[in-house]
Amino acid sequence: MYAQKQFDKIVFFDYDNKAYPFQEPFNRENFNKYLNRVFGMCGSASLAKQLKPVMHFSTIQPGDVIIRGGFPGHAVMVIDVAENAAGKKIYLLAQSYMPAQDIHVLVNPMNADLSPWYAVNDDHFIETPEYRFTRNELMKW
Image 1 (cartoon, rainbow, N blue to C red):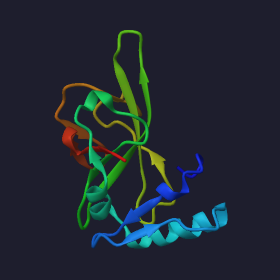
Image 2 (spheres, rainbow, N blue to C red; image 1 turned 90 degrees about the horizontal axis):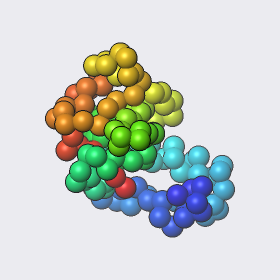
Image 3 (tube, rainbow, N blue to C red; image 1 turned 180 degrees about the horizontal axis):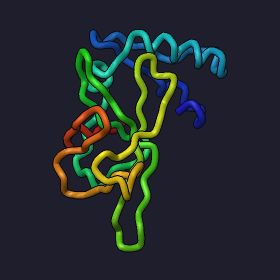
């Protein structure tokens, strides 16, 4: 949204539903300050309330989030999706911790041959190195 200059759409909510909108001036320095504030006030519990469920895992897209809200909770972001000519999809996941400033790509602990990619398949669970998510925890903005 920042890159697309959709500044009025950049808003996060804390767990008590208090809004934190990005406000002028709309420059990188102010955006970085805004993110530092959001990192301190909004976490997985509030983000899980703000996101919308993805109804079909096969529609996974970059920017989607696999999230378990809570205290603590955790979230991983889909950073890329690829599809071959036969229609089979794979995706990359990345994560960070608090504050969410250093992000890294996750390895796939269940498939070393495919790692760091994960396959879109019928498995109910998504096993990451530290968390076990379910397909119904996939959400979007």
